Amino acid sequence: MKIQLLSDLHLESESFEPLPLPDAELLVLAGDIDSSWHGYERFADWPVPVLVVAGNHEFDGREITQAWPAFRGHCARFGLTLLERESVVLSTRSGSRVRFVGSVRWCDFDAFGPAGRERALRAGAYFQRVMAATIDGAPFDAAAVRREAQVCRAWLSATLQEPPAGRWDRTVAITHFAPSLRSADPRYGPLPSTASFCNADDELLPHVTTWLHGHLHCRHDYRVVHPDGRVTRVVSQARGLGAKGECEGFDAGLVVEA
Image 1 (cartoon, rainbow, N blue to C red):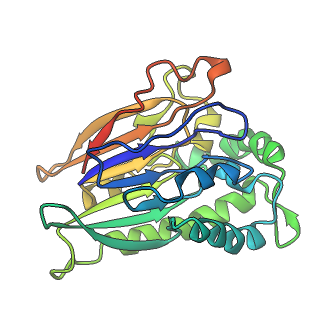
Image 2: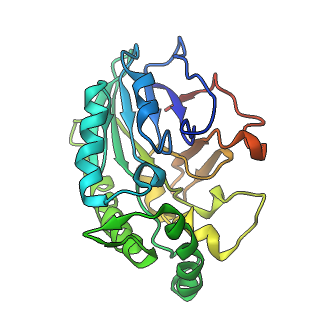
């Protein structure tokens, strides 16, 4: 399937006009499109189906438990399909069936293993203060993010191991947070804060042919070869912030074959 992939547009502050690509069969929005949610209106009446996975900034200053149903309704209003611990099977123009498995997949701060968790949690506390969200009325702090992340991880692991039983031909995962340290931003190197952007979901990669993500304000397109010979392609098409020069090299015309 030919996929137009966009993430981290930050339309609440950035000037960017997304346009449909003529070859695309599907548009995937992998989070941090607009923290105000207003930018999602631009994708109404899109010529192909649109799948959405929320980013962390979609919850800025919000109560998580209230924001989820409100955001789902907002997406539905414009004909967009939100995936949060959900999957959908779509048919390609050639007739094959692709299962899309989606979740924000919050970070569990275990990217560097249990030994690095405490340092990662301390580093992550900064990002959660900036996010200023709550969950059940309490601060959505790093510990709360980890709890949500563990629920996402358990769902992904169970779902990705389901046998296709003739229902789909291949699986594509969509998350906002990255599935591997291979997707770390090369500008910063391996820091405790990297665990706020990347998870260690490498053992899940063999269950998908393609993994699409966002969150890091840089682009990635790499292949992971597994011991049994299977290959997983990991792609991020984040635009990032113009003031920081992160848009340099962004290709608005990229189509991902998945």
